[in-house]
Length: 114
Length: 114
Image (cartoon, rainbow over all chains, first blue to last red; front, side):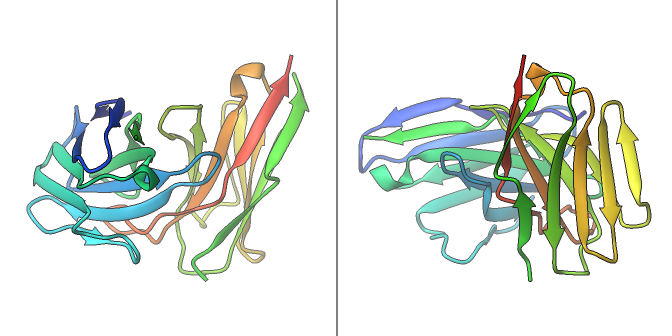
């Protein structure tokens, strides 16, 4: 199957700082990438959908100025959490899609904001 | 109408037993139903998926049963193994070329006892 990587896998930062998470499709071109957020023992909640070269579409309730998404190429999307606060601590997962309905998920990034 | 219900919330099965997880949906426009397996601290991995034109799909020990009229589908894990212990998510989407609009169930935590 297709491989999606995320970097970093784990990040700890101080409140007020910004954190960038990278999502890469390693062996295919991802026309669409998705960003999810998952709290402990809960399901995945879609935050935004991004198509290469265009602005991301954010789900209702997700602040686009706080969660900046860039999808500059067919293999890379980034999520920047700006001015992070403890309530932003979560598991962030990206996925990528290029054919049909299959979404291939990255391994996730654990963000802890102190 | 976009919700996907999943039960049970948690499941304990003896090694060699059959694990059964059920999902139900309301939106008849859904036409793609994948199951994902997630281990702690990892991203979800596609396990098996089905479209509504078939009533059953089997891959190894994993079988999806689909009942279009009841708007229900289930995952059966035969000969369950301790290595199957994970959280399982059903999902549903309306197909297009970019695999968008996934709706995930709340998840089932499966524990297979040795």
